[in-house]
Length: 225
Image (cartoon, rainbow, N blue to C red; front, top):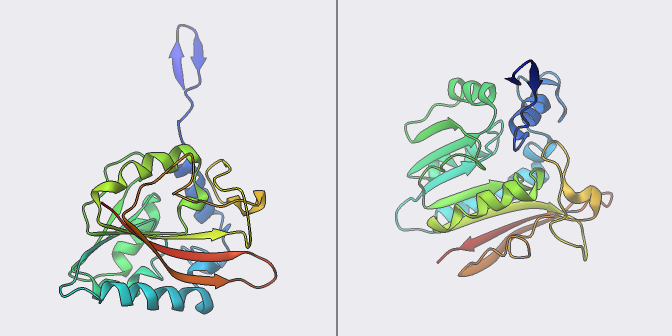
């Protein structure tokens, strides 16, 4: 709140993502009340996690020398911890301060570092490859656009998104937070408007069909100019 004369004037934050994500972890909105931090079943179910680790490991080990990786939206690091050993340097980023502090204590390797950062606002760490695993699906189009503008300086982006199965209208806008576009029969497609992300090459690395008509999880590798 800002005080103007005798009045209090409300100042609206441009993007409420930090508060929303802190609430997700504080209130255990993604489940597992016994865990200090839990990034949801999508970061823990073997049928979702294991194939992802396999395809990203295969990609990272395809280079003669290990490349540097930046994991944007690392969450509780249940997935990222399996990829650190295949990277020259692994930078894990998340917006929730308590989560990053917890990860720093729990996960320690010489080539691993954690940073607390709002990736829509701050400068991104340098790396050869960006991992964005089921992160953009929680963000508004305004925030996604801000992130997309920062991506061309990287050589590779590996993007994972939860999408409807079959045809859908991409990139319907949402308010950032716990939910995703699946409720609107939509999903994030960076190559479609309003993002129009330009890439040199794209390759689908993984397609996981979820049970009970809960959509699909698609992992795509983009090589940039």
